[in-house]
Length: 215
Ligand code: PRP
Ligand code: URA
Image 1 (cartoon, rainbow, N blue to C red):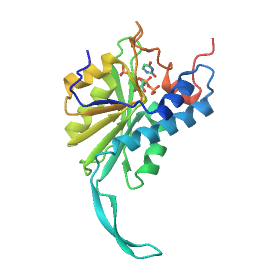
Image 2 (image 1 turned 90 degrees about the vertical axis):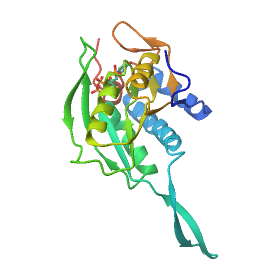
Image 3 (image 1 turned 180 degrees about the vertical axis):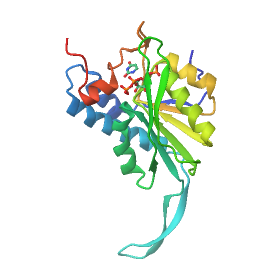
C-alpha cells in the first residue's frame, strides 16, 4: 500500500490528464508518443522544481534595473536508459544548466529484477538535487536500484519523476527510500502477472523507439 503521508505527488492538472490519454492510446504512433513524453516531462519538471532554491540576479530591463531571480541549485538529471531518454530534452529546456548522467538498467523479463549495464556518473556527486527520469514505475526495482547507486555515489537530495506509477512500485520505493520524493502524472490500478502496469501504456521503451513485437 502507498503511504499517504510520504512524499508522493500525482499531478491532476487538466493538461496532464489530456496528454496522458494520448500517451496511453494504443493507436498513438512512436513520433506522437515521443512528443507527448516530452510535453508531459516539461509539465512534471515544472512541478519538480516548485521548491528549488533561487538566488538574486541583477538585471536591467528596458525600463530600469531590478533584482530578478535565477535557479540557485546545481541539478543532475539521471535518465534511466532506455525509456528515460525521452524525458531529458524537456527537462533541459527548463533547467539549461543541469548536468545529465546516464544510467542503464533493464528489467529481466523472467525475474523482473533490474540489471545495470551502463553507468556514466562522474567520480563524485557535484550537485544539490538529482532528478531520476523514468516514464514507468512498476515493481519499483529499477527505481530503487537507481536510488541505491546515487546514494552510494553521494547524492543527498533525490526526486523520482515518472509518468505512470503502480502502487506496488510507489510502496517499494517508499519502503527502501522514504526520503525520496516521487512525482508522477498518474497512479494506476496495479501490476499484471508479467509486471506490467494496468491500464498503463504498455512498454514505454518500445513505444518510444518503435521496437515492439510485431504480432
Ligand atoms: C522499464 C521502465 C523502467 C522499468 C520499470 O524499462 O522504463 O526502467 O521498466 O519497471 P520496474 O519498476 O518493475 O523496475 P525496461 O526494463 O523495459 O527497459 P527499456 O527502458 O530499455 O525498455
Ligand atoms: N515497464 C514498462 O515499460 N511498462 C510497464 O508497464 C512496466 C514496466
